[in-house]
Image (cartoon, rainbow, N blue to C red):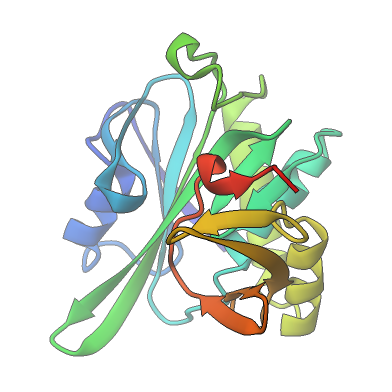
Length: 220
């Protein structure tokens, strides 16, 4: 279902598809062996050489955004690697970041014409990130194939299965977070991917706010 285009080096796999989406067909995958200007959320730069960095182009169907993190979790589980999802789009191992996911929409005028899903997984040790990030030593192309197979299968799954699965692997559920100077208790993830939190009698649904590891409040 997916067609993979491999490049030795690109600035960003997401940018390639965003700039040339009209050239590539639906379900194209851009794989970069080296990414010089990869971006995470809020335009953080992530340069990658040995890691698995790729982007998926979707033109006709815009599936549930929970599919992307779950496809990574399920693929890694086949290697016996247990991970969790730190809402909205980070995959953690041993409490440290292993994978980041960046989902971007493409518009022509007011009409959405495509979605680009960028996924980056640490497959190499980074000494400057040891306190916050971790890695797994796995064959790059094989892992990519497993993720794409999982993604393909999850596109046919019911939303109830996706929601129960993301709740099962959620890193934040039951924890407390510090947001806007207030300590909130995380209840879980809602049907449309919102994070439900509460403070006393106040309930808040978070859509795209970033919950950093530093924001997790450990003093219960």
